[in-house]
Length: 176
Ligand code: FES
Image (tube, rainbow, N blue to C red; front, side, top):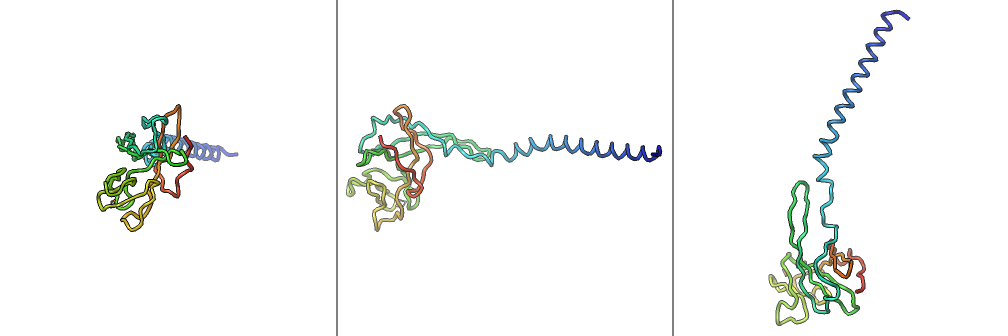
């Protein structure tokens, strides 16, 4: 092999090596930057987590009671504290029920027995929306779907609530 051939070969080898090393170093810098930029968007918010809402199972009766709590919510880079509410009670089967108070018509807040003309019902004052105690919308009132339900679990005798689901999506309830 001639001296000139050996030099070309060495130069080519060095070119490949330096190019590869440069690319490797560039990737090493770019990957963390990309990850930092994209990660918050890919992360799920805290919506799927369960929160202790401060209500002991023993204090849950057949009378719906309103429970309020706060969660930390992360949307992309924005972190905020969000207020949540639920109407909680035990139904005829002694199952714990936790309804979202958000009206299925246009999103106002429903109240248990919010109108004296409609006892034993949830009532929405915005357009006189009504729901039976089991959350089903009363026919011929504005809401066209039942109230949503929270996922729930019980730990150490306390109620934990999670994600809100439509009636079709809701998981079977735990008996208390
Ligand atoms: S928003 Fe509740 S009835 Fe319209």
